[in-house]
Amino acid sequence: MHWPKLSRSILTAASLCLAVAMAASPARAAELPTQPTTGKETLTVVSYNTHGGIGIDGRYNLARIADIITQTHADVVGLQEVGAYWHKHAQHEDEAQFYIRRLHMYGFFAPIFNLDAGTPGGPRRQYGVLLLSRYPIQGMENHRIARRLTRDQRESVAMKPGFAEAMIHVHGQDLHIYLTHLDYRRDTHVRARQVADMMRIVSEDTGPKVLMGDLNAVPAAPELRPLWKVFDQTMNRCQGGCATFPADSPRRLIDYVLVSHGLKVRSVHVVDTTASDHRPVRAVISLAGAKHPRTLPAPASKRT
Image 1 (cartoon, rainbow, N blue to C red):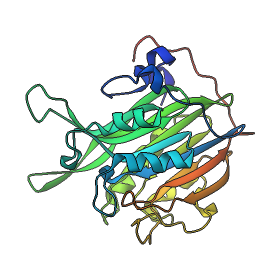
Image 2 (tube, rainbow, N blue to C red):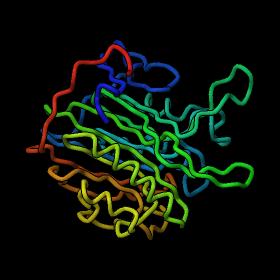
Image 3 (cartoon, one colour):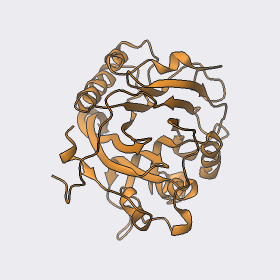
Image 4 (cartoon, helix red, strand yellow):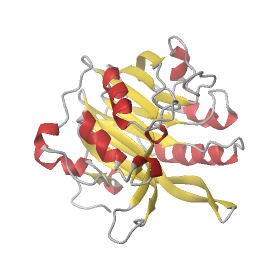
């Protein structure tokens, strides 16, 4: 991807709404993001499939999810299965906006599905991934990748959005952040196409990169092999139990925080919680000596 084609926004406290892509409204001044919590030239990154806010106990509780994230002291968070007026159990709640306000972070909501309102005059119904950052989001893009669709009991594959990319400027460097949620079915064909689509997008960018999300495949899965050309197998460094699903008795590692070659991972671990049906992954990344630092171009006045 070429940055002149990216929607870019230089954010200030007075214009936080520019960071909240497709969210309902900007946070109030009292809710502006707090300062990053990690040490010099490090970044704490968390990936978490929220299961629409439903825990293993069957209870819907967004605050519980948010509290888990707070305890990780994350600087950047990637959430999957986030809805805005989407889930019936959510009582018509904008989950993306809830997390942005509750966690006091900048947010980029990248819907996979974006449907008309359920009632005349109501808000659009959206479902996708949410990227949160304590650092201002300098640029953002909701990329299209292959998606399996089911309509009238017929399945098809089409290009749909939901592969989020954002860039943040941290410790003097521009860092590309990617967030994804891949197909869950046993048939690997669609996941392989999705990985190919993602790698085509990633390969157009220079500089250090972080990819996170629910890949719905274990590290040795053949469809994930193209990832290892660009990204380290970070989860090999996981400390303690490294399986992420199901949360109450995890048997499979399918959730990831990956870094491009040249970045260093200080620690990786899976957080023991049943607030969702997945466990979150937390990684502390060292940016010292990262290869190919890049300067952000001047903001574009409009998207091209």
